Length: 428
Image (cartoon, rainbow, N blue to C red; front, side, top):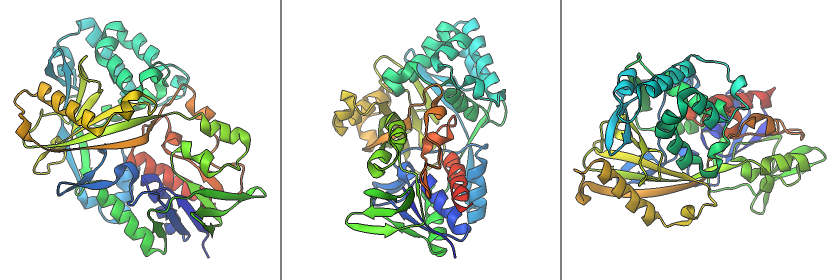
């Protein structure tokens, strides 16, 4: 007889936990506060188009994700496209992402280009991140590429994603992002990224179907208010006025929620969770009649744009219209986060028309803004050392979120891999 295990959160990690538990013969019950599964991969109806609230893509190195597609029988839904990158700088869109584009880039000296290129290449060849763990990312990059290339190509990316935290980020975390994209190439000159036919919802629904077919449950619009702990072990969860007993509890919700859900944890553990910092996001998605550029990802360095870049999603996944994601990252405490959606929608229309002056107001079919309070953990030097262990000093209780696969950035494949590992630990 399998164990009855509660899983908190129905994002990709929580679903992966429940999937593996069900495969191992246990009875997972997922509790999700939202009215849909998926977390940041959840889909919504965008004027008749079912699409993720936040953009996602896949790399050839996403082995855990690809393995799960095989197991679920949906590997035939995977599609790969050759994509392009660009850089908006000095009032023009410039090609980006390969050696020729770097050499032709206008606004950098040859020495700065060579230093930047060498650093990017070495990042893709490097495998060990431990020596970068306690080094500040901005200092590390500046030492390698020089002040000129840092100012032109990196500074605004840091500033408009992390604001005051931009000068206290782990070099290991930045390295992992550079390496992941660098390894998603046919060769030095061509980049290949992937998407699922039907979007991330194809994976979400396949996971849901499997979990439920094995006797698991997914309880939507049912936020857990407290995890009950007694005499050093977990007893179950409280949802509203009801108590649900469980043999074990695995939490995958953002770490800042943990102190409220588990106030009976030891004080030092609670203190560690309370120190975790996150960046929020207001992500605008725009549906257009015509493309903005030919690029999937466009970095931006423009004093009139408070964004690090934008993603022209339909240059990866054709949809019959043109869809662009424009993320505004910022601390949730920043005054800008309190501004109305209309402020961000107006900015996006202005920015896109500046990048492509041929866009007219009539070309904007629909715009929508979504907000996520805990979008990105702020990974400071030595980040992982400050997190409590996944298995807490309470029998039957495990806690993790996207922070725990540092230095890798948050992504579906990383969530799948880590979630399955959590489930195996719980089964052991």
